[in-house]
Each structure stands twice: as structure tokens, then as C-alpha cells.
Length: 294
Image 1 (cartoon, rainbow, N blue to C red):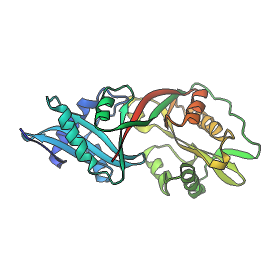
Image 2: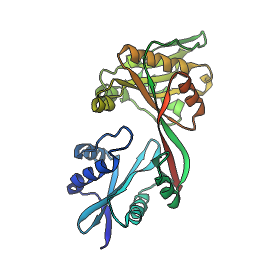
Image 3: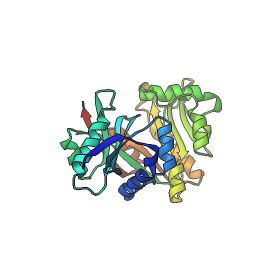
């Protein structure tokens, strides 16, 4: 029987949701898919979903996303089928046709045997991502910073400065005007007080934002905080500002009755990883980026 790879129809959603939840239920900190969550993701233009159909039955799916980390194949899954690898390859090939630039990547668990399957498709390991977590048991002492630097919370009238500093530090548009209000809506009781900044020469030069880890707390009944984005302007690096603000943010979360905190960082950002391990963070999970240059 011929397998057809096509775009998702609305009527496919119930079958797709079941397939994804069956496939990924054992994955790290799994958040179940729903028809509503997928619909919102699609509606926001953030996702293109493909399905593989055989004899009028959905037997597989892939998704493409052009996001912050680059152009990504978010998932590829095929149910029990003797031709699983070929169907997955067909889905990957179709997803690759959506790529607008010269490369595409996917994230795979660091110890997954599926890494070899991506290598067979022409993908290579290029870095990876750590999810790092730490317990919050007490207030910690802040590392020392230059005497002319002020550590404080962001003020409500400083959103423009916040946006400019974050984007300059990342050298890309990471946030925009309206982000603070969006976080207030998505993660109450977040407000400007949750954003820790370092001020030097009457200018914000380093930032660490803290928020409630809202989805995780709802799903797992926890009291976990989340840190990010965090950045320091190039000319102010090496002055312990990131360390001090991270500890200050952790202390703030502890005072807000959070018992743990999490963040994401690139495995290649060795200074950040060492800094975080020094103040109590451990790697909760590790993904490898598999990238193909087209």
C-alpha cells in the first residue's frame, strides 16, 4: 500500500494527539499534547505539521518549526510498522523542503540510539542543550562585584532598556517591547521585581530574569522557578555580574517560596556551565543538536 505524506487536516488532530502522547509519554518532563495546544501552536504560525497516511489511516507525523534556535524538525514519529525507517525518512525529506536557509537541526536525547538514524540521514552532531536544575534551600551569599555597580530589580519604566540590553547581549532579537506584559499574563505573579539587573555608569549592563516555571508547576504540582533570559554586555563580562545576578535571582525565588529553579544553557557555553555548577546547578537533562547543511 502506498504511503502518502501530506499536510495536517483538522480532522487528523485526535489521531495525531494520541500518537504523540503514546510516543513521548516516557520522555523527560513530558507535557501531554492536546488538540487545543496543537491548534494554538499552528494558529500562531509557529509550526507546520506533516502526516504519513496509509489506507486512510494516520501512521506517522513530522513537524517543522522556524524558531529561536534555528530551523528545526521538532518531531518525527511512526507507529508500529515494518517500514518505519523508510516512512520516517520520507517525513524528514518532506519537512526539509520547508527549510528556508541552508541548514536544519533536530534535538535528540544525548544517549538515544536514534542519533545514529539521524547520522544516516546526513546529520552531524553540532553542540547540544543542557536543562540545569538546582534546589533552593537557603539564601546564598552574593559574589563580589565592582564597587561602582548597583544590583537591583528592574523598574516598570525601564522596559525599553531591558529589551535593548537583552538583545545587545545576545546579538539577536531575543525579546521585544511587550514581552514583560506577556510574562505577566502567562506567569503570574511575575512583574518587573522578578528581573534582576546590574547598573553601571547609569546604564543596565547585565540582566537575569526569573519567573515561575508555570507549566511545570501546574502539571507536576511543584514550586519551581525558571531563569532566563540572562545576559551581560560584552564590555562588562568577567566582572562576576552574571554570577551575582543569578544568585540574587535564586535568593528572590527562595523568598517567593520556590523550592527549586531550572534553566537552559548551551553545552558549548563552558563559562556559563561552570558558573552554574559552582552555585549548585546540576544537569537535569542533555539533548544533542543534530544538524544538516542542505
